[in-house]
Amino acid sequence: MAQMHEQDVVTVREIPDTRLPAIGWTVLVFVVLAVGAWEWRMRSLGLLAGDLEDGKSAWAVERRKLESGEHDGVVLIGGSRILFVHLCHGQNWK
Image (cartoon, rainbow, N blue to C red):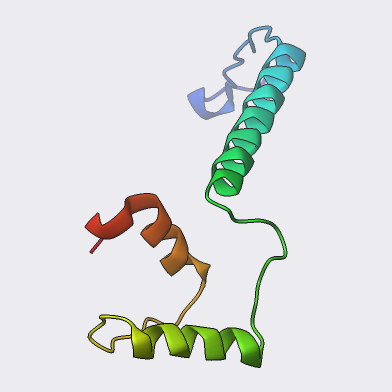
């Protein structure tokens, strides 16, 4: 008979029974609620999917706002994150 080393012994761990379908449905409900809350918040801010205005007329309107307003002439050009931060935090953002 062959000798057994302690390296040859395999520890077997029992996997406890889980309620995977219940966990899956709970995750699905949380995701749907989170997406719904996000959509509601964005729509309450006036943002809609596909409402990107990036034509020459839109830029002319924005230039006119800058020239006629009481601004220091600084313009932030970038993605919608700038608008999101400005709308969410108002004048308190830095």
